[in-house]
Image 1 (spheres, rainbow, N blue to C red):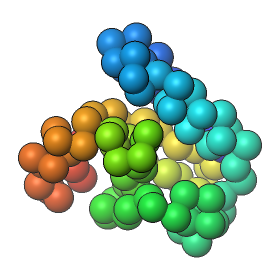
Image 2: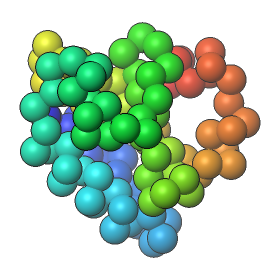
Image 3: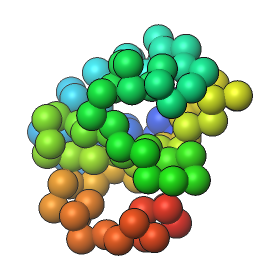
Length: 100
């Protein structure tokens, strides 16, 4: 898959050293994937949650961080929207997540 907005991962990793390595691993894994459907994505990331409008939430470093991305299967792209702590994620409504 082509990951768009890699700079979000880099920037977040610089500011959050505890997340840095886990984000690098996630990025490398996603680049190797060739998802063409929701089921393909879940085969690789079983804990990912679909929140609507093509957006998925990935658990990073166990449950410490969340990465929200829009996945466009037809274009083989993953557009990173935001990375946040689990606590910050928990404060957002479903509508707020879909608007990211």
